[in-house]
Length: 275
Image (cartoon, rainbow, N blue to C red):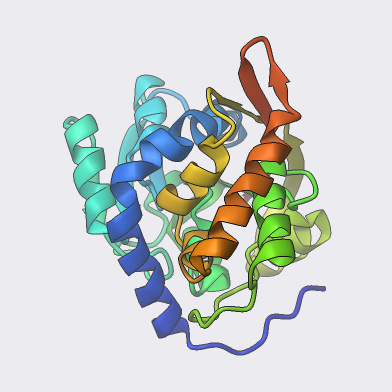
């Protein structure tokens, strides 16, 4: 079982919100083509179809919300980052987006047929509370699904960056502490947590995503610009350490070159359950 150390949840949430104000403009170019790959499997997991009342929590620029709307679902998107909500509204003017806290959803009980969260759980100060509130706003027999990254030994992009920081820089830098980033990469932890929250028919599987990149520097650039926690770790390094980290990540990515592109394995964990 994963046991998290006590930390200041409000300080961590403020850190994430501030970080997304900086990273939002880079997210699409950094991770968009990768994270959108989960849309089909995730929406299948919640049976999204015409008329489904669907809530996309931590919606970011609205990729999953837009995919659900194309299926005919009645979609609401929510995110705690104003810059992300602005981007989602600009991209998808026909979909309703609003700011809000995933752990205190501004909706009545049993309002939605489906709730989804695509990689958002990683950025929440209170992930267990977010799961509980998703359960609250679902109708009986409603479906919930979320994705997170697989562990860094499998999600190669993150593994390369973290290994390079450990070897050439300082991994323990003074940042607000938060929940373990890879907590829900473990199937046992996912099942235990969802079942404890009240979900049944829990399913956990791995999605074999591939990050297709045009440059060996693209992984470093994406993580340093389009993320929050790891980006902050990178910003805390000395210039010499940062240059060594970049070079090490570039070298690691070069091993995945094929047909003029770099195909980096980035599997995700897809979890779902029924209220």
